Structures are given as structure tokens and as C-alpha cells.
Amino acid sequence: MLTRDTETEYGTLTITVGWILLPLLIAQIYNATVMPQTPLDDRAPLISTHMSLGLTVFLLVIARLVLWAQSPRQKAPQGLPESAYGFQRLMLLSLLLNFAVLAFIGLLSAWAHGYDVRLFWFIPLPGFLPETYPLIVTLGYFHSAMMFYATFVLPIYLIFCVYLAIRYKVGILRMLPGKAV
Image (cartoon, rainbow, N blue to C red; front, side, top):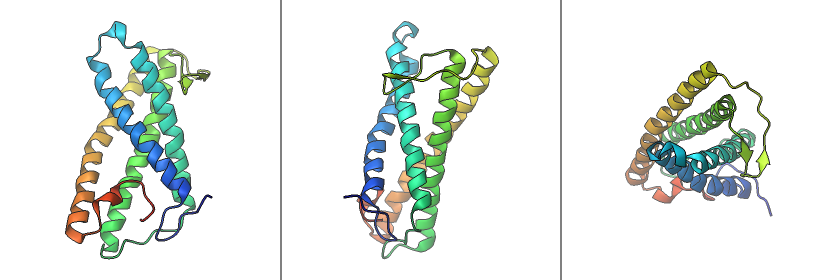
């Protein structure tokens, strides 16, 4: 049975989307790290995986943002100041928005490269952009800039969550998708 988000707990759909997103984001970050170190002739499967994971992450992040928008504003866990909780949520929201924009720009960049873009490796998506070098360069720069932002903010977010868990004794497992806010 699907439960909805409340002021103190996440619903089953939000939790499920979070648990699916977590390993996909880890896999995508790993793939993006390995790809530049791989010889050009051996990159095709990595690029295909990168695009498919990126599209999947994009859809799940959009779903998570919709769930976020439809949810009542969650209250801070007992013992955690509202301001600290609000800042943590703001950082998480900025990361989710960043991942959505990053994936969308990546999709546009893949079309500009002329790649065969597929969702879940099987469902082909028609390209909507022409293959042009100026688009490849422009979108590539934006894609990289968004990734640099995530690379900078994600560790700060994780460190801040650990700090809150230690300082206010609210539990380190709060960082993982779960029932309690």
C-alpha cells in the first residue's frame, strides 16, 4: 500500500524513489569517472551506459521533485533546529535540481553528438538536435559545469549531514532514504 508523505515521515513512493536513485547515482558517478580513463575505442559501452543511466536518473529525479512539491513541509526531527534542517533540505533540493538539469543537458549533448540515445538500453529516443560542433562544445561545457557543481556540493552536503547527526544526535541513517524525516 502506498502511503503519502507527512510532516514527520516520508511515504512509500518517496522512499522507493530514493532507494532506486541512490545506487543509480553512485553507478553514474563511477561510470563518469572511469570513462575518461578508458581508451576511445573501448568507450562505446560506457557511453551507452552513461546515457541510459542519465536518462533513468533524470526521470527519477523529476519524480522525486514532483513528490517534494506535493508533500507537506516536513518538520525537523526532534532535537534538530529548524534552521539546520531547512539548510540541509535546501542543499538536497539544489542537488536534485542540479542532477535534473545535468541529465537534461547531457541528453541534449548526446543528440548534438549524434549518439543513439536509448532509455533502459532498449527504448530508442529520437534526436531533436542537429549534429553540430558548436552545440557539442557549448552543451559539453554546461554539462561539465553542472557536474563540477555537484562534485563540490555533494561532499559538503554529506559532511553537513554527518555534522548534524553528531552534533544533535539525530542519527546518521537519516541521510539514507527512509521513513523518518
